[in-house]
Length: 260
Image (cartoon, rainbow, N blue to C red; front, side, top):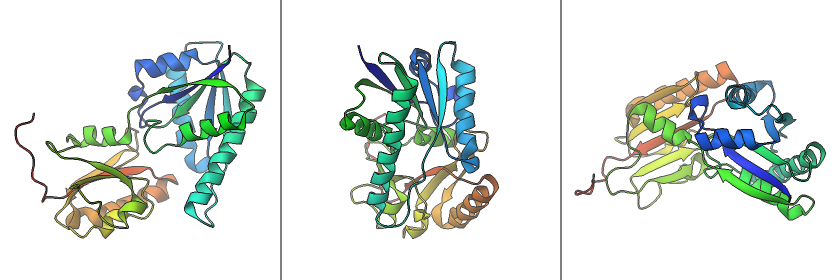
């Protein structure tokens, strides 16, 4: 026997996004780790606590909170992220060794889906590579902010027979991706939608998706870009943080007939 680590996708912010598989994983866990990111992002830890209160029925499960170290912003972006991931991996390693037994199951509650622009899987593999903790790994998918956005705006993610590219704001600011007319943007700290030259493009934007703070805006990019920017700035000031995503759809992409 050895430890098991469960990476559990808990959805985009609505506790009702929890799947049956995720709830079962929650209750299989001997230890649940909840990250805290200071007062600014206390909401994120509170949502995880709310999920545990709603769905955790295993009275033997222990909950441990840990502080997430801040990522350094000097130097290269990739170097800063890599150092940050290794710092979190060391916290995982120490916490698992101190807080769990050799046959325990440890649950990590991951916002959204662990496979989409989240680094928990990579961080856990850093723990494995260090060699001090042996474990089996299971990953439970979750509802993403992209799904929550499309559901909230009542739109399909893709046009018939056409691709959708998922990228970051940093990448979009370098230019529109080739080969697609539809781009989903996540992790945008630079408001990259303002760099898109096709002002006839349609944008569907949302922040705090799935949560009581949710706000969404849709329309022609040249008509709503300033409104999105102002709304985003105001929301960040009011809440101390922002988590948003958007779909930009260029109008020159013809749909392929014959599919439903």
